[in-house]
Length: 296
Image (cartoon, rainbow, N blue to C red):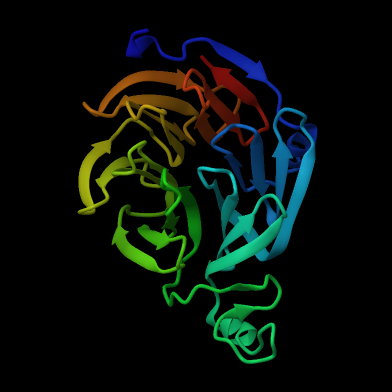
């Protein structure tokens, strides 16, 4: 198949009924598909709901936030879900037991309060008695996180914030490895290339940008959208980058030449989330208005 003929056929599908109802009521602020396509997470006011895509059943609800969840991302093996909120916390959740396992960054007062006790009664810095796990020691403020993405090996979590910066977090230690300015405005979308060497970012400035992660060097500005970028996804082979915007257009880019190769209008609503199927043969898109369609 020629690259210019990719994903021409569009099939309408259905979201889980419970999620569709929440979208209709404007209760959902972000969506994320798991890499294997079996799960769909939705964030809202202080809660995250996780659905089984095949059955449509909700099998977990995560709570504990005081403000809206603005960003979600599954780890490559589906075992962790990262979430960012307007309460300036960045958290990791075990998706099997529906439990918070690590706070990468958060309010320093909260950290100090939780450091006062440990399982054996001896004060332990950064111990969280609620989750029986350590809080990360990073002093970096994550800002108002608006986008998240795991690296292909799951070792790094990238966060994009309202201050226009990208921050790279080490998942194992909770420390921050680097931070750099990426956009004039909010960073609303992130995606790692298949080899983990390139990070795609999308902002409220309507730009899609490609970055070399080793040097934080800007590789390209991709210009086609006329409104904020809402999500990004690399194809499994890394050859294609899909971008969605509030302008209700889905764009496909050839990564090596930075060429725009296809444009699709999205009549079903503003794009909320994009993902490629595990076999790479389908591009799945869900909108803020509750529509789900599959291009193949």
